[in-house]
Length: 220
Ligand SMILES: [Zn+2]
Image 1 (cartoon, helix red, strand yellow):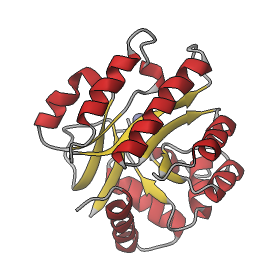
Image 2 (cartoon, protein in one colour):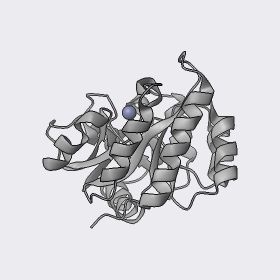
Image 3 (cartoon, protein in one colour):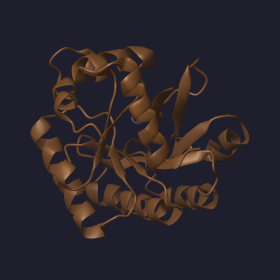
């Protein structure tokens, strides 16, 4: 069973389990009425400074729904214009929802790893924090591993010698997931590449990740 913990695709064919990420909170209830498994959050790129608290309220109202396996994606992004303090307020609310719903948090983090690490130290969350789309230096991951972070890797691992591929190679076997995110690369190619990088059999890898999926996302 292949597992995709973070995808922006909703209807693409898939041989496995996919967590589709809902970015548009206004459509949350519509998605929940249909088929699928979801994560929902306020992405830093989609924060409405004047009504993000209303979006939080909609998420809060629905977050116990069993089709929602995780909160997020949410996080911090230094490359956008929106001031970091507003991003932090929204992210803090998402952290609180994750703790309250007892569901893991899927994190978008761009050039804000020091802030993320210090937030984790301050909050001491019970829920797992999963940094998705990881594609930077192993040294950064290493520090975060000591703080109990999880990581998810996507199509960047298909590029030979990418930071993502190098980090995946060194990752402890119980701390990572795979994802398609916005990519149109099929999930099985991402699994095949990951198996090769890890030097393990593809079936062993997919069984392992499915086991971790059930555990961390409280699935099945
Ligand atoms: Zn994403």
